[in-house]
Image 1 (cartoon, rainbow, N blue to C red):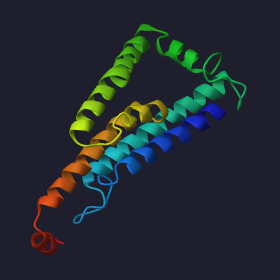
Image 2: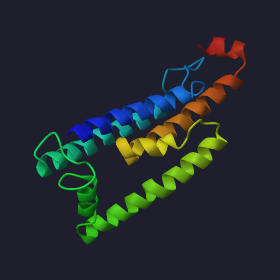
Image 3: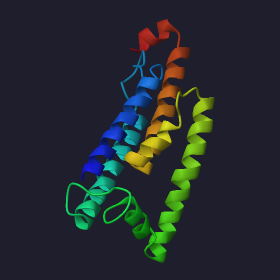
Image 4: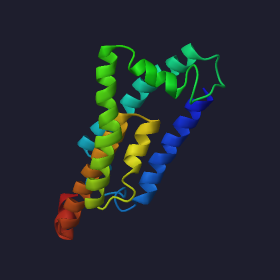
Length: 167
């Protein structure tokens, strides 16, 4: 369980680092709501994926260890055992390899390349957060960041008088 708590804290820390590394993106827009409906949906999906996934992770650790202290790298309840079970049968292996390729190869490439093009500082952190939260959370957070940038760009192009009239 200690390893899960550390994982959780590292996940929260990574999210904080992303937000602090990009203050221009995560600032409040001059007009409109704090979060758009799309941002709310993306964050909601991401958070739901963390809750759902972590419920299985906690069950996995509790079922395969004697409780709080265990080696997170080898042995029962470890990453090694988790990876073995992910490929335990052909159905699990099919999903496991698809997930692994998407998480370890596609997400980092897209986040780094597209993130840099969009001016996101430290875009590799969207991949890093998937190691601690969930794959879905990383994608949802990245997509919500792009949506926030779109809203900010749109907000910045609206003349101030129009923005005041619409407010």
